Amino acid sequence: MSPLSAARAALRVYAAGAAVVLAQLLRRCRGGFAEPVLAPQPDRVAIVTGGTDGIGYSTAKHLARLGMHVIIVEFLYCDLASLQSIRQFVQKFKKKKIPLHVLVNNAGVMMVPQRKTRDGFEEHFGLNYLGHFLLTNLLLDTMKESGSPGCSARVLAVSSATHYIGELNMDDLQGSRCYSPHGAYAQSKLALVLFMYHLQRLLAAQGSPVTANVVDPGVVNTDLYKHVFWGTRLIKKLFGWWFFKTPDEGAWTSVYAAVTPDLEGIGGRYLYNEKETKSLTITYDLDLQRELWARSCQMTGIIDMTQDTFSG
Ligand SMILES: NC(=O)c1ccc[n+]([C@@H]2O[C@H](COP(=O)([O-])OP(=O)(O)OC[C@H]3O[C@@H](n4cnc5c(N)ncnc54)[C@H](O)[C@@H]3O)[C@@H](O)[C@H]2O)c1
Image (tube, rainbow, N blue to C red; front, side, top):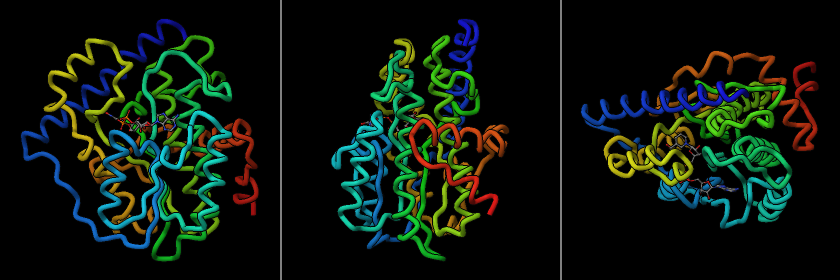
């Protein structure tokens, strides 16, 4: 990415954020956000990555209140910036011999300075996207066993409105030529959408009782903003309580998508404010979905089952 493209990416991220904040403000003036009413979920198990803070903590809390057994990644230690740590986490989880009905791929970092994960991937791409790609793939067999027709297991990925201005640079996924923290964050959130859509097609083709959807929490008052420009941090500090959603409000779309009967058997959707909405046009590009999936399999060292499923 050239310096000019990096500046353009920053402006576009701020413009996308401002548009969401404005819409949230209008909604606040018209009565605000209402907590979805959901039925108890006893005997169901969920994993929420990044469940120690912010939206993830609120998601875990709400799911636990509905009666779910919730595993918070970090309490069962998992560093999503390390492929080895993810594999160890999955091994530990599987030793528990419990089912898995809901996986919320929520953890993330935003606009961090250029740095790498333990495996040498750019941090946004490696942690926000690839870490969840590996985690999900390693847990899929358990989820397939845990779901049943009429009571599917559910995979969710927490994306963001920034995906709308994201660009997937297949020639330089690690942003090594010219790093833009804004572009890298947006790319990781775009990759998550492509991932969920492709996964859903794969699961549907296999007739698996597992669905995959994307959730967008809106702009939420959390610590995610600690690396953004100081002026933005100041605005958040002064007006965040009014402009931004609270972490509980930000979690509602995740909680809704995790348990609502309205989405039973339904996947491949982008959900915002508990409603389906369109994602960026290129996210529906099947070739791009397939290409990213294949590259991600190579990068994480897992076998690509896509060819067998779609040709068989
Ligand atoms: N806050 C917002 O306005 C907003 C908007 C759109 C999308 N999101 C997305 O929501 C998700 C949650 O963000 P948040 O706002 O609650 O931020 P947050 O900073 O409050 O929480 C992030 C969580 O991710 C965890 N995490 C970070 N690095 C990790 C690692 N290496 N391994 C395991 N866990 C790790 C942290 O421990 C923390 O629990 C993120 O994916 C973010 O991109 C947030």
